[in-house]
Picture 1 (tube, rainbow, N blue to C red):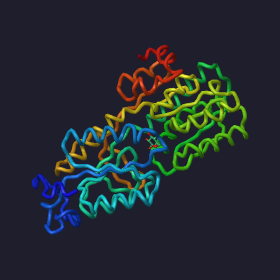
Picture 2 (picture 1 turned 90 degrees about the vertical axis):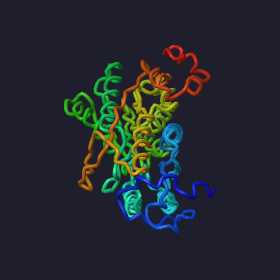
Picture 3 (picture 1 turned 45 degrees about the vertical axis):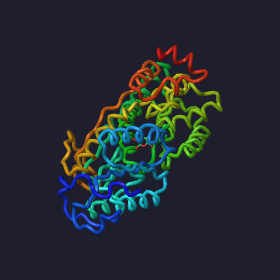
Picture 4 (picture 1 turned 135 degrees about the vertical axis):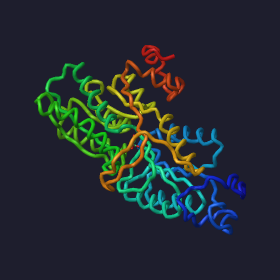
Amino acid sequence: MRKGILSLLAVGVLATGGLTACGDDKSDSGSGDAGKKQKIGVILPDSKSSARWETADRKYLEAAFKAAGVDFDIQNAQGDKAAFQTIAEQMITGGVNVLMIVNLDSGTGKAVLDKAKSAGVATIDYDRLTLGGSASYYVSFDNTAVGKLQGEGLVKCLTDLKATKPIIAELNGSQTDNNATLFKAGYDGVLKAKYDAGEYVKGPDQWVPDWDNTQAGTIFEQMLTSTPNIAGVLAANDGLGNAAINALKKQGLNGKVPVTGQDATVQGLQNILNGDQCMTVYKAVKQEADAAAKLAIGLAKGEKGSTTQKVTDPEGKRDVDAVLLTPKSITKDNVKDVVDDGYVTVAELCTGDFAAKCTAAGIK
Ligand code: BGC
């Protein structure tokens, strides 16, 4: 517990000044930056809205911090906004000098970022931009591009099925997640052109609170009841897609109604191999975690990181230094790429009945 009483490096501290309240070990007796540890705190959002947070993000961040030999603490708020704030407060008083968050909504995200800032803790928005927030950096994918791939993927599947005037249902992510807004802007851009041309018919369109997969199932069943001839489903991630697929299965419509997804989860990829899901979007989380870890480690050591892009926070009306990575569309033809990239293993994906389907898809 008492490891690291003395900070290993007293040099290169943050230039932000005013570092206060190192209520950790003996450092509170010291004054100023010398007592500040180099420690990175990370708060992940939950483990239900997508498998990625625990299976990918945690793993890759942990590996990057360990490789750099930097002290870190990764916790998961499990979808609880109060817990999210408590974890942040404990990390700040516990002496992290960098805090990286995936917010549960912009309101609590902003409260946490502001608190960190006033304690002299540097901050990074990881994956989700906190609107009106104060993070020094934002690391994510080009989320509008993610949505565009989903829209284009659905169009391709409907074209392959020779669908005429298909009615499209949209299961959006959480309305409080800026990414969900960006995904929707991306796919609506593609679909609107089809609606306007009279080629597609706009059907039910709903946000799923907190990306909750169970609620998504209920919402989609209601959509199917009110609009039984839904012919295509734009689902914003694999979990929401799976909820729609389960409802379609009850009507014997799985595989006949294309469904999109995102995150290249094992479940999503298996749904693709089964022919029940038309596509997913693979975001190489390792790249995202590595980029964020690099910035965090730099900040922890008092260095200024380098970024290539800027995004505008529409609420705070400020430009945030950002790293935005490129997403990739995955269909049955290239599920293999996700395996080749090491994101999922053959052992996880090709279980039971999927063994033969993996072989057919060139995965071994
Ligand atoms: C992430 C997605 C994820 C979703 C639900 C979004 O902010 O970008 O990858 O599926 O949250 O956790």
